[in-house]
Length: 510
Image (cartoon, rainbow, N blue to C red; front, side):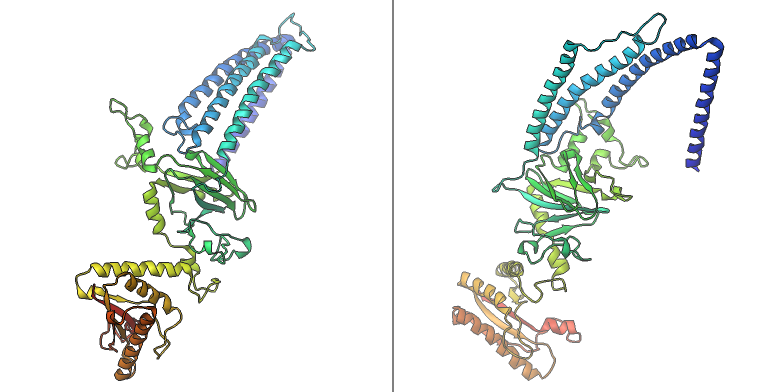
């Protein structure tokens, strides 16, 4: 309905304009063409001067009014190391082009008024004026030379890639309709390769999991997930697109780069202020206690005067600065700049995409194999457990389960992958020479209790012999089998029976 009303209004305005033209034409015939033309010249000349004043005043007033929100002045100073250079170049360009803008518009409308058609006035034809042409060619050329040279210098600084040995963090941003997928490196600090032919419903980025650097990469795709980067660290962003042209835009950091399908781009920047510090800047007060930026002290929710203030709810934003489709607006992501310590803590808490979504599925090229990353993770878990056990005073807390020590079904032969866990136990005993342990085997209650007891004895003895052959002194170890007499779970369920089939060691002395 609103659209129909707008169309009717436009049609009505068009009809009025046409009728005014007809009335003017009729009046001209009545009063005479020449007199009417002179009146029209005077009217348009004066109107040009009025428009000039209103136009320039409007430009200046609107620029001053919106300078903080739209032009990056006031509290919105650049939040990156390279940002001030871009802002300086912008201000310098604005200064010179602003002068030209004002002068040319004054000249344009003043000439329209001064040289309007009048009686007994004839146009003077000048073929050319060498001096004038040299002036208006030379001055812009010199100014443009300085601007271009300065711009190239800033460009080379801002767009320089990281050096071969420069410390930095590399992340990857992949745009698609209508979201961003962010990929972070894991503990190895490196992103793995990817190939578009690897793209599947699960592996939407086409990550190549044959590349070991990919195995610990972290992928963040959910629109609600916050992008985190550390303060003061150089960040190199790989930028690419999976479908159409997008644009990676972080306006507060003066970062803006197209995401082009099939043509990876990048941007390097260093954040210089945390999100919390930026909020404090927006909420800062003058010496007299009044807000420095009153607009940021308004309620974040206009309908709720008791809501938090705008500056308290401020967030850095990642936006797509291309019109990439109907859902373009939904590509907004929140970015948070945190301290390096907080970033390290957050990074350590993230799960790798491979381990959480690919491991041991049909898409896993390493299915059935134990990876170095898993070996290291198991070692860290084991060391954490033994450190806790050494500090414990309760005897029950000095019992440690060997989760990854397994045997062939119904036999006392170790599986090949058990050696990694037993090597961790050997390293612990080798490092702590005063520690003596009891090696214990347990079974579930399936089958004959006597056979179960014998099997548990033989299994604990196998572990004993493995460590003995590695060089652990015999007097520091004992082995015992408990059969099904010490369950830790309900043998009535398959899960419980699996829990009861276990190998443990207990710290006897230290």
